[in-house]
Structures are given as structure tokens and as C-alpha cells.
Image (cartoon, rainbow, N blue to C red):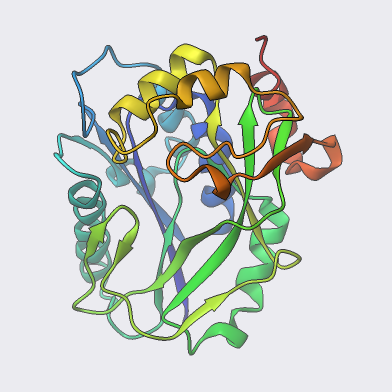
Length: 268
């Protein structure tokens, strides 16, 4: 039987962790969350409400309580591999072989939200993807206060990874993946990505502490702060990767995300 197990790593990411977890918790067979006590880069900051919100979603399930754990890791790959090891150990304790070729790790970041129904429909028709090693998903990238979208949708993310005995995360969300790679069309599944949404202070903190810290353009914070719908070339490392912006329509958002609408349309 095919199993889909979510893997989330997080540090101080309270704004979107609830809708991100809610979709994964409802659609996947299991999910593990590794919460860092310190960032990968830069000085630690006081903890926000991430742990509280994770427990709100996960705590209703007795079997899930052991799936949320704290730790300190120096790199993103280290943190992801710690969660991966926890998944493998849990599957073995349950008498399941995690390397049977039918166990999939689903990378769920704390600022990435799925439409629950769309995700469930994708998983229910997975037989068409059984021969893949990696399944990529189109990212719908939101910008600034969450009411703008990057256009066109050209970004993809590694999301579904077939677990094998040699698999390890090596850089960011990538790892030792087999050669058979499939990208799902956007009409099948998209991931709503909020990496560049927040207050200015949140954006600075997030991008100074995450795994790409030190690689982005020195002028990018001003680019983000001064952006308008007419702005172009907005990516923090390679500007052309975020070519333009358009307004978000509410019917484009995952329905369960609408209850967090105030977290999207922030005051400038």
C-alpha cells in the first residue's frame, strides 16, 4: 500500500504554519515536524508561536504527539535528515518496510499551503506516478502582503520523493534522488508559496536566518519594500526568476486558507 508521509522543518514561522499543516495533516497518512530552537544562520531570536500553532493542529491526534520534536541543527539538510530518520524509525517500529518502493516523503514547508481537495485528488490517482523517483509541483508564489502573485507560474519545487535506503537530503530540499523525475501540471496540483510574504521585519528576519542567507542581493530588501504591481525582476538572488506581479483573486486561494485571510493582506 502506498504511504505518503509529510516532512516539515520550521523555525519561527508562525504566520502560515497552521494552514500549511492543516492541509498536510488531513490529506497525508502521517506527518513529522522538526522545530529548530535556533536558526541555521545568524543569532537566535525569541521563539514565536510556531510551537503553539503546530500543537494546535497535531495535538488532536495521540499518535502524532511523538511526531513533533525540537532540536538544534546547523544546516537545512541536517534538520531535514533528522526528521527523515524519525520517519524511518517510526515506520520500522510499526512493522512497515519504509524502503519497499511504495513509501513517499512529502516535503511540506511551513510557508507552503495546499488546497486540501486538490492534494487528496492527486494522491488518490497516484498510480499514474508510481514509476517516478521525484515528483515536482508548480509553485504559485505570493509577494509582499499576500495579495499579489508572481506571474507567470514558472517555479517548481521538489515535493514527492520516493524513499529508498540510500536517500539523504544534501542541500536545501534536494537529495540523493533517482533519475525518473516528473513535474505535475498546474491543473493537477499547485503549492501556494508565501516565502516573500510578511511584514518588513519578518522578511528581514526570515531571509537573514534561512539557508540562502548571504546569497541574496544586498539591494533586495529595498526592492521588496518599494515593490508595486508594475515592478519587474523581483527575485532575491536571480531577479529574472520573479518577472512580474498581478493581483490575487480570492477564488484562487485554497478554501481553508481564507480563514487566515488577515494573515495574507497585511498593512504596509
